[in-house]
Image (cartoon, rainbow, N blue to C red; front, side, top):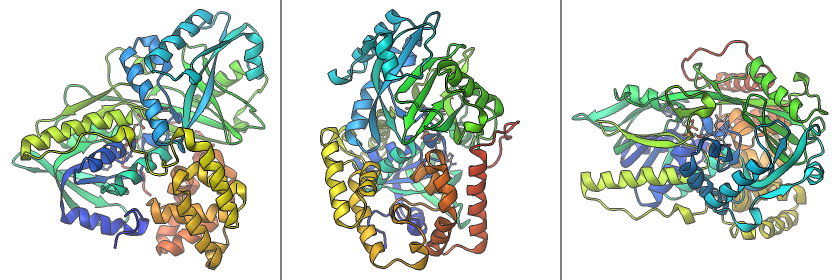
Length: 568
Ligand code: FAD
């Protein structure tokens, strides 16, 4: 039987069997933010929707970004006016529909004597941005003099400082945004499954009609049939186009970006800063939950797509950028607590450097009918999905004379987003902190869960009540703050491995790495007991998590060769 949401790790086989039995209007390959957005829109419009993801949801690029829902201010420099206007406007929609995963954050743009920007260009740039992105009054630009700038951020380089501009971006958790969109898609009828790889495309009389999919946990194959197949494979879209024999014309270029995480004691940034580097690029430094993270780099990448790693050179670049703009902090490699690396799926443009390539998205359709969505940004996922599903609906109308309702995602809260909109957010959190305390939780824990899970916090409260009454010995080995999110993650967020939990359901491997080291054995024991792992599975998942812990602080000298998907 399907669970409350059909999204428990234990239900993967049932979901895959159903996918193999039934016929779908649309099969989406790829469970990053793009695939999740398409699944939500398609399911809401009444399309029978299936989605397969070969790793964990968001394990591709969608858990490896700068974690900002942003309009791309820097693209104004390249006169990408249309993109800034479109993506900028989407920010407000993403925020309204998911205030629990998007937090407004004032960003400081300092300018120095001899730097890329000055008071005039910053002021004009932000003015144009406010206009294009339709920024609401309270969040519009402010220009600050030297003193006000240093009050906001005393760590900034004082030498040559002329002032700053201040504007608002939204901080997010990219993987949680993806999972919340996916959960909402499932609630609205989509079937979605992780660790299921489309390894062959199926055709009927030359027209694409589905995919052979392998369950990477059990090794079992399935054939999933659909009227339309969408290639939402991010950095892998060209691999699927190769399978479809349609990789021609425009292709992808992958560029890698890394981020470093520091404890706030070592890098006590009190204010997010977006600053230019001596080589003319822009880098973010962002405070978050007792840590500060900074990035990113932008270098052509030809290594293993599934497993980008930080090199010593990447790390040195970001450290140098930070130490240049915040000279008193004097950070060294020993201060790096964690890191992550990701690859951008950009559409190749001849003669352009990585930072100059446009971040725009495009939809391509092959002769067989495979619809590919390439490029884009996390922030623009909803609009991108709308365009893809519009096209799918037109195609289904043409093929089968069917009609579906129009796009409504602009006004659909994502899972956990039923909190009374952005205006109701603070009151919602306060109310839940009290409700949690009444159940015997500490107000801090209840508040932290409300902030992370939004309106789904009630589901965590229900699990907490159950688990406080009769916890097994293995459950009791974990404190309630870890145990309940873990049970929720397995029961309602299709969490299969400890890395899924520590990286993509909680972000702990980036922002609370010591907690991961502290609780990993007990988490593995509970997951193993709960899911009935074999000794081999337990060994494999433990090794995988240990590898991630090691790689978070250890650079590679040589990028991994392109190869198979990393074993889970
Ligand atoms: P992915 O997230 O990679 O999803 C594609 C999925 O397809 C993968 O999970 C993969 O496993 C799966 N897949 C591939 N082949 C198969 C197959 N055969 N069968 C089944 N599944 C398959 N955007 C912003 O808006 N804000 C930012 O701050 C930002 N910062 C960024 C910083 C960096 C360093 C990078 C790299 C990107 C950044 N971006 C940002 C861009 C953003 O992260 C991406 O545009 C977005 O995550 C792409 O999502 P996607 O779903 O298209 O791709």
